[in-house]
Image (tube, one colour):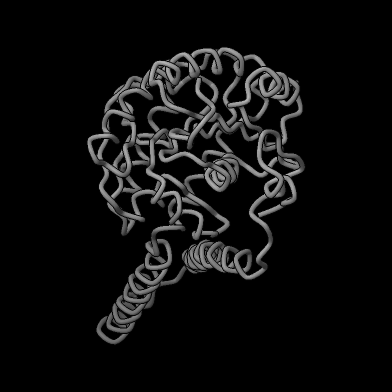
Length: 323
């Protein structure tokens, strides 16, 4: 690869405990990038790995100057790792992908082809998802369909973070510093000329998923609360409906008393009603608290991530420890 001239492609790769996958990912990715015959860089972001991932990344950097490493001081999460990679990328086109080889590096050539046709964002649409449980496929399908319906952003279902973005889109992303990030939604939010290509998502090459149900649920909440006020609106609608039902029930009891002289006894019914209303109130107080908590996080203005070490970047980068 020619090291003279500007970087054409930046590959942004979050890494968290992927010691069994990194070398295979590097070999397959460099084979594809070399065939493009243009200068590239591969930016690995070590997101607080506790295995030998960082050691392997150091070795790759020592062997290949196109490999660059951003080493976080701790685990800041997948979306922050992607953010750091975009912040320090130098390419005219930036490609985001995971290191587990579920997103085949061979698809990069198709992304580049559509980019060269004049598209600013080329996203990869999952035509099939190999090696995933029925539960995960079902919940993922429901989540993407739901978020497309309730958000105010026109998003494509079955699209993850695997995509190519033009430098001008990345420049816009660098100005967006919200803390609870849902990058795949933000990409559609920024606009520009976008298109998609279909691909088959493979099963993991090795290791275990880094997105258990707990993280998937948090990710879903981040996506919904980042782009939709529907949960808050549901609280208002539920309050209005319950109030109308209570008012109608009161009218019915009053009419029954006036017309027939009877009243409706039942401590159990009253208890159930009070518990039901109390549960609804606590549920929606929790939803409101979720939004307020996110506002609090934004006000604190803490860094999105902290970098302990840079490998392969210039002196200016090495002097920066956080962003």
